[in-house]
Length: 246
Image (cartoon, rainbow, N blue to C red; front, side, top):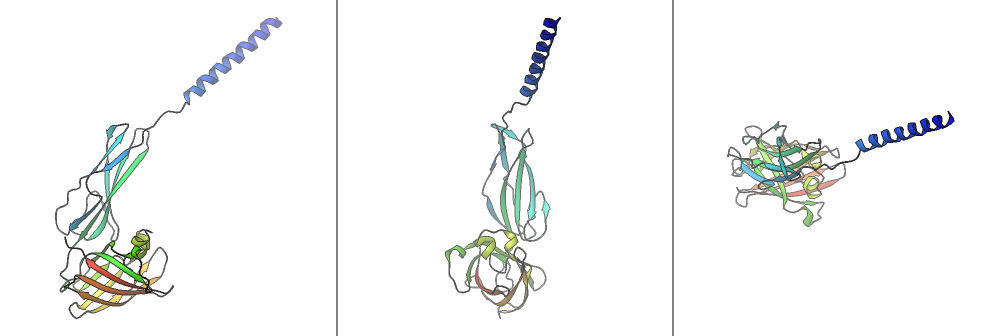
């Protein structure tokens, strides 16, 4: 009887070990292939307001096989969400392409599209501009030819600027749109006479108002000279905006 008892225990242990091995083998790791995204065409595109824009899209591969891509579009400086760029409204648009593999892992890629109306700088200061900024008199190549600042019309003689400090933190330091001085309004009593009034902008990322000190327009050189200040620090930003022709 003792021998039978011992044999039973041994068989039970073997049986338990066998079950455990099967359980462990069921949890063996396997390979998943993350989506590899490729944006077709230029990653930054400029579109004149009202013109046609055809999105070239993106492709996604998982283990060399094509998988579906979904597209979403959002506006950076004025609220917008959709699946296509609104060519009738000036803004910076971010197109995001997303693909999900069979295991639920996502890959993303993006394209930036700027939509702007080019004003003649005599009757309108609308446009897309590259920006050079001098802060408190300090000239630095890091803050030259920043791309881009946009000005769009909000009323008969009122305009909004996407960044009242010319992209100093957003573009020059690459902090992102939360560090642009947004919401600044320019009212033009006379563009040829360089007669303007202003409403303050705000840097939401830091906090604090940006006040406009002066502004002048050169329709021949296609430039705008703008001085703004951040009293809380204090910093003064001397900005040259050069209109992009397209």
